[in-house]
Image (cartoon, rainbow, N blue to C red; front, side, top):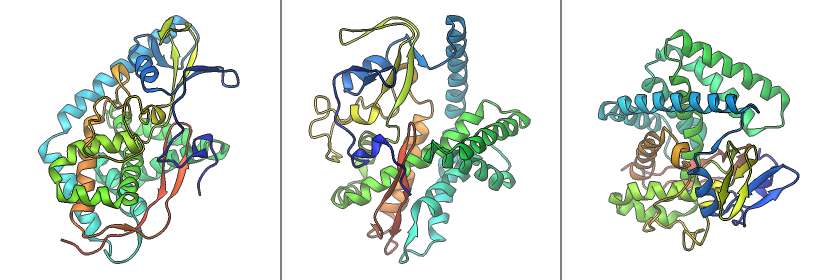
Length: 344
């Protein structure tokens, strides 16, 4: 069931148009949605996630975050290997082969989420025997994201985070918790949105199927067009200028990434899914020091998923309308009922 949220005032794959930077009194925050404003904020060295009020603690939060980011980047570099890609490609193929290609099924529930979970387990070298338990914990996080006002789900998500933390601590790999959650929980959100974009734009999907050499560029366009993060919440650790507007130290900022990626000043005809577009510079994975540490894994997994679905079957199509969920930061299809068609 779709969740009521201001981001759903528009079709999820057509976010609100960007506006000039302004201060929202109700939220007590600057709202940035133009591409130039969002990019300036993300590239500022004075921007961090909202944290404790003292400057010392804010520096500590930043230092800890940079340390964790460096550890994740190290793990990504060590794990993003041809062997691992071959392994998860095999997972994807086997999962799809277990499904009837001519019967309607939920692509999110029966392929995207289980495949991403298995891939996360493989990447972090966790015993596959724990997959079911880890999947239940990830589901608790996802349910809370889909219903941010539900207190019971929020409490369960807090418990799940603690259990996950303890699990990875016990396995002497605490730095992998964020990477695991990113692959098992956040990556499915983008894969579902990317698949929805292709299924809702069959002409673009057919063009891609006939020109697979465009796939890397297509992934970038899908990130711009259907990136799952609609908003980021940040705080200024020092005074900063955004397009001649003074932002004071301690001010909060809400960065509308989805709207920035549809800014016509940066991306002509932004509401068109165009795999020939020069999409360099999109902010779907943030930018600067805030750039997503697992970005290379997201790209690699997206390429595998698209090839396994749209390259291995004749005419994947939707069998039911897409329903969407919207959380505080993310927006995604809650389900994608599809029929794959004949296998090639």
